[in-house]
Length: 78
Image 1 (cartoon, rainbow, N blue to C red):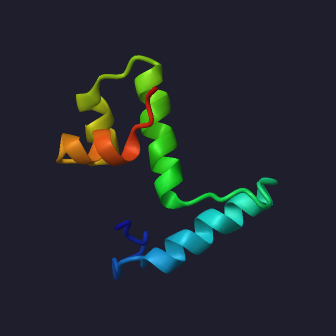
Image 2: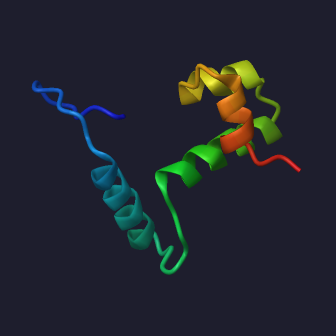
């Protein structure tokens, strides 16, 4: 999970992340379009791969230790 940027370093829970992502998507005009943290990660991985980034570099950027997780759950290549 992500960490708050303050001295107590408390975890930000899934609901807080989801609410933030959905709120920002609506503010950007994505009304009625499902957006989630997962879709943002998948979009990043897919776009990076489509632009020629190596799988190892994408995994490092996304902090995936298991390449199988990255390839099977986050990359949408046709």
